[in-house]
Image (cartoon, rainbow over all chains, first blue to last red; front, side, top):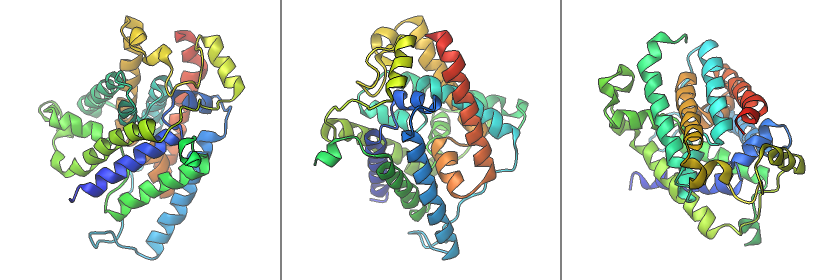
Length: 137
Length: 185
């Protein structure tokens, strides 16, 4: 039962991303061509609502279901890793048209060749873990 | 019913994605899908090769459950909540894609030119998917997050690192779309 709520959040997330067309390779291509507001609207409105909500949560010190104060862990301060890592991610995002959420959702829509992208992503993560100490962060 | 079966407008989608972020915060977790890739490595025994994978992956079971749910959600959305309406892309996008050799853009979720088995089972087609995945997996861990962790969660928390990462996402995406895709296709 503990996991049912996470399963339902996942189902909800999957449905929303398909119905919003954010899982579509074409929409990602269109976004990077600056030819439609659609993707910017989705991300922009989600972030705007996110900013207001997170601000409110912190201001009112709201608690989670576990009774602890809701807390968002900060990210390490750096420029190199975010800019380099982000650019590498962006290259793959625009090529495969799928980021780490949609990958799974698209398997559910019946695109089994997406499993190859997932395999590549697991391999990429593995390579990062192995060569992490040699990379500038 | 018509409203559900048709594609959802951006503002409905944005609102609902923010809801996912908030639900996970309420459940005491943070929204970040790419962490699961690291978990898969750990489950597969990658801890033998790098300390980065030595952690108790069982603490991530909740996130793997979200992944399972996402697969089910994708299935439900196409089987029961869609009417097969084509994606209303900008006609200019359709034309640009046609010039690259992509026919009928928007008729399906993904281009058969990349994802149909006919194309996947060629050396070029296989490499496109593998390298695409590889770049996503490597880049997201290097950057410490993906679209959900940085663009949605990080920006909602006004974190500068996430803004830098999102700038990176765009540098890579623009280079791929404007310079590399035309060389591949």
